[in-house]
Image (cartoon, rainbow, N blue to C red; front, side, top):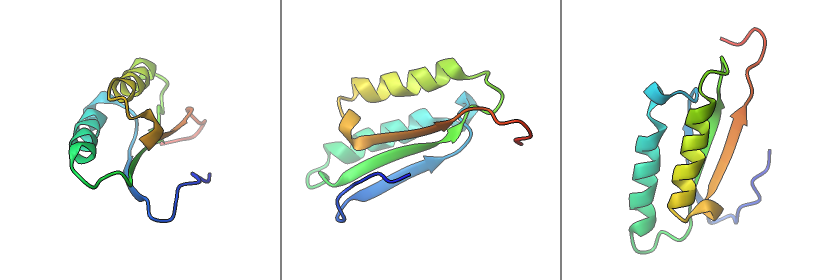
Length: 88
């Protein structure tokens, strides 16, 4: 999927199963620190992963809510796949 970001964008990403023990919130905290720094207007962030067993839907909602609270929603991109038969 294309993000349509300017060529000079710095994209930071976290690719992992979307489950609390992967601690995506630490990535969000790091992103919040990056955007507070001077000269970081080109920084954008992506969370890519899946809720493999369909058990962590609330966690995905929690991540989206945390990004919304940061008031940096335009800097974020989520690619959250649904559970797929035969995934492991």
